[in-house]
Image (tube, rainbow, N blue to C red; front, top):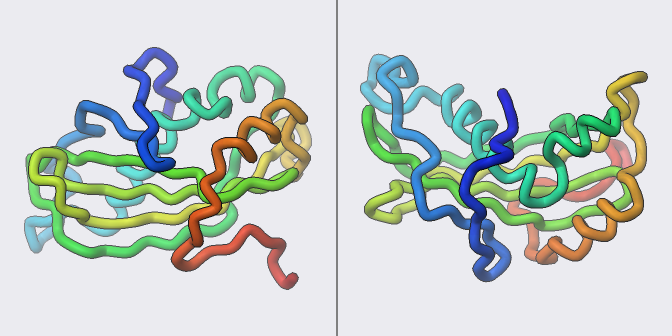
Length: 165
């Protein structure tokens, strides 16, 4: 999915990157036999939110042009309330923590008009050299930027650490 480089800028409130328009509406093809958003499409919506967020924190096309990218290493998803066909999906994001190679982000999905939370999603991203497909440090200026955006809010499930550590 492409990054949303030219979309509206979010505002930052209490560490949350927030947009004044919906991310999407629940599409008919995203709905399952129970007539609600199929569990896999929650991740599709969160991936769209990631693409919307990345340019605003320095992880858009410029990073890719430098031969770097982000890969998700771990993800946790919490379903709180169902979304049904045509409901407007709102989404906001918070940088929880960052270090030399990792970034921990929380996304929240909500009904855009009514405001209730549908789901939360935490993701641990890695900086990857796309030429060799290996984890590598963030460029120094970007690492400083990500560290400055990190709220330090406690994650619900994930941690900024190496597996097995």
